[in-house]
Figure 1 (tube, rainbow, N blue to C red):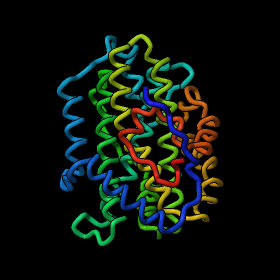
Figure 2 (figure 1 turned 90 degrees about the vertical axis):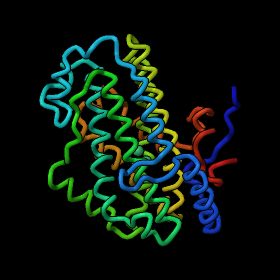
Figure 3 (figure 1 turned 30 degrees about the horizontal axis):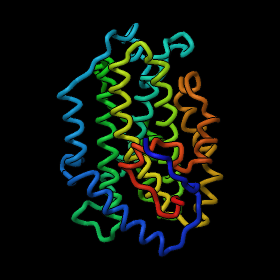
Figure 4 (figure 1 turned 180 degrees about the horizontal axis):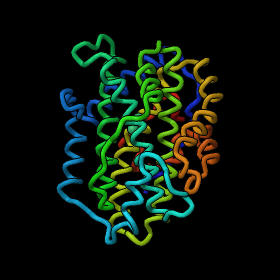
Length: 298
Ligand SMILES: [Fe+2]
Ligand SMILES: [Fe+2]
């Protein structure tokens, strides 16, 4: 077993020289980790290989959901009383809603930010690959849902207002966009950590399917913990201060839109974990495949 190293808070200060050096080291990591960008397909070679592995070696739950129609009726908007619905279905609708937000956000941004050929700076290139990774996550989530025999899932746009917000967001200048972009990555990471724990309990009677869900989730988390550090690296002391203030309201607002989440997740604990995040809560085997900013390492 690998000893867990000591880490510093994700909100630790850093100099502009450290920021530049960390962008360099992230870019080296990112190319090795994600593989080649397949821009036409919004895909990356190493991620595609992973997805192919999951698809070619499918695992399906022993039992279908108690009533799959409940998933389809509530996955976009919850129409029934969440308290009357089994925890497996609630967990899967939460996953769908979370991933759908991600999908809408990245679809809006993909058409706006520079393509790899147009990228002028290192951070342009980093952002392009980052977005392609997020598209891979949506494909991974799709595979998670298929593990529970949910084969008819479609990724639907959000309502016009939210759709518009997601389109405006990537056009904002860095000083406005970088802090919420960092906080949303951190929210993703803390959500996945809570999700990982919940799989144990909710899918206790589905050991093979649960194992597969965790395998897929861990692929996503390795990227996500690197994204947290990478987006942290975009902000300076003012951004760090703003991020701490913004974190709780942003998490609460996001999960207000997923009404079933509160029956499964402790949102306030997720907020505390976000504020306390320092990588020591992540398993060393996942960390070994990911990337951590130098100023968050002791
Ligand atoms: Fe993601
Ligand atoms: Fe991410």
